[in-house]
Amino acid sequence: METLYLKIDQNVEVHEQDITLGDIGKMTCADETVVSRLSTVKLVKVKEPEFAKYTVSVLAVIEKIHEIYPNLEVNNIGESEFVLTYKKLKKQGVLNFFKVFLVCLISFFGSAFTIMTFNNDVGVTDLFNNIYERLMDKKASGITTLEVSYCIGLALGIIVFFNHFFGRKLTADPTPLEVEMRLYEDDVNTMLLETNTRKEYEIDVD
Image (cartoon, rainbow, N blue to C red; front, top):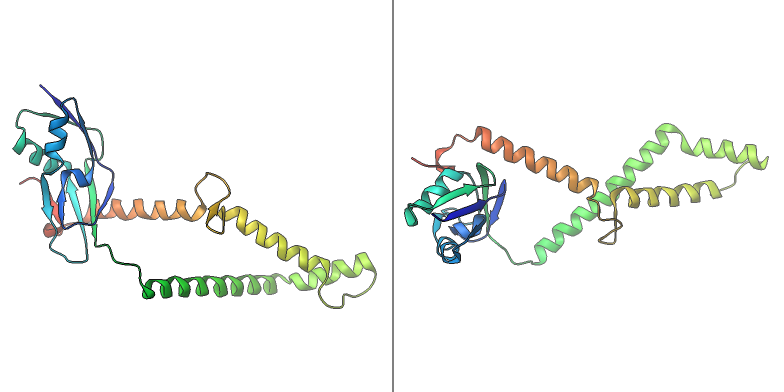
């Protein structure tokens, strides 16, 4: 008896409305014709034109497999349930460029405002003036080396912390934003799998 090994991730994203078994996960079998045949088997047809999320039980996938190969042994080494996300691919246009530009502006001015209010709250300017006066034995007149060094150090600290500089990573480690986004995605997937009671968005065996 042949054995099919099936592996499906917790979150699967597809871009075609006709979703096949080959779209949702990886399969391997000693008989390659089995994998080739099953990869074309349709699991579901998405009705929504732009976006949809489904919670899918692997039992529904195994049921589809057994409809073609009743005696095939299926060994699932992935998730027992997973989130299937359908998202229609859209062409990159002027609107997307404008959105990215707007987000960059908000992030830049928002971060600048946050840094300035923090410095005012803790009195960084007064502190630098006191340090300068004690070291140089005179009052500061304008911008000093302390302010310039602080600005350079702040910028370098942000770059090192976020592990990004002009779209390139400084190290192979994931950035803090990537870690937080991954944790958020895992929480959303867990919530959908545990609380989704909308039957039209559940794919399971009867």
